[in-house]
Length: 39
Image (cartoon, rainbow, N blue to C red):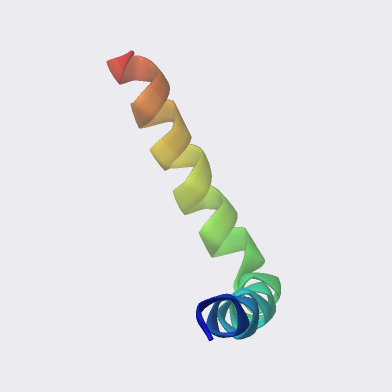
């Protein structure tokens, strides 16, 4: 059950990332830069 739920969530997440790709990529890039600066 756990992995099945995870698979469904992953597919839904993929669809949302495809739709909102530019905004999400900007957020991810910002988050990665913050993490790198903290190290």
